[in-house]
Amino acid sequence: MESLKTTYTPEELQEVLGCFVVEKQQFNFQPLTAGLINDTFLVCNEEKPLYVLQRINHAIFPDISGLMKNVSSALDALDANDYSEIRLLKTREGSYFTKVTSGYWRLMSFIADSTTYNTTEKEETAFEAGRVIGNFHLLLQDQNLLEYTDTIPRFHDMTLREQQFADALATADDSKLKIASDAIAFAKDTLNTLKDIQMDALQARVCHNDTKLNNILFSKETGKGLCLIDLDTIMKGYFFYDFGDAIRTVVNTAPEDEKQLELICFKEHLFSAFVAGLASNPAFLSKAELESLPMGAVFMPFIHGLRALTDYLENNRYYKVAYENQNLDRCVSLFDFSKKALDKIPFMETELKRLFSNT
Image 1 (tube, rainbow, N blue to C red):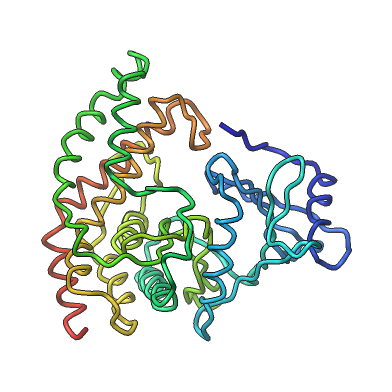
Image 2: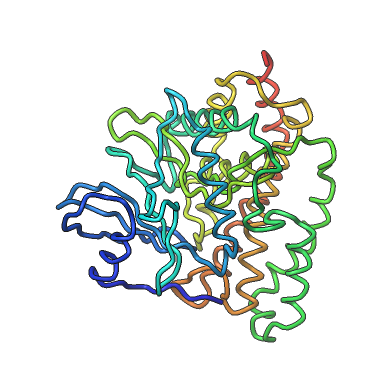
């Protein structure tokens, strides 16, 4: 697997930046370390951020041209007064990305006075997260799915993830199998439960496919949701993917790799606020889609947990890790949230019916 560098010299980054059509001046670069896949830097004039420079992980995203066509097409459609604009900067050759010795890079505009949250305790933030995700889907609902490349084919395909898990089990070290035995048992049991989702009744949409809370920008001044970021996984999907991914990070105030499972929670008032924000948009979801959402809140944390468990068993080939067992910690935390979401299905069904009663 391609390995992203952990450090770049200012001279290297300045050289990459010189490939794009920007005013020539001396910039400084601030690394953003939250992402698990790409290498990302704020490009600043003194201390003022102007751009986001990002190296795209070519091992994860082999079709860079298709990925950037998806992103540029979506950004063209995400044009509304209440949805903040992100611009792609072109290279001197007129492309939206450049290839240099260190890899593939792109440059995007920075939205001033914006911030992100990994978790929240505020109903206002949960509401805005729901509202902006709904707005995102409304703006993209007329896009032609055939024109969007699958940047990670079968990204949320449970059949694929189950097979990868089985392959990892067959080749993993005995010591890892023993350490992860409880997580492995839960995975096998829950895979059977999630086979009940009826995908055939659901409308395929252009989805973000990675709508965790920290992929939403908020205004520092007003708290209003501005737009979604980290658009590499924009491609065909089902709305319950985006719903479930948001719920796992909006209603749980613990980090993704929290080791103290008693801190992992499902806060009902944050769920209700998120759904109220979603429902504040003009109606766009079918009855079948609405009915799929509670199980989506179980499906998405589970599939992320299964992928983390598989990566742990395969010696951390996919995700960046800060320590050897971090993927296992991610898995156990995500699986614990899946258990708690399963217990909340009756509550979720009631709230969705209540808040979408007029749609």
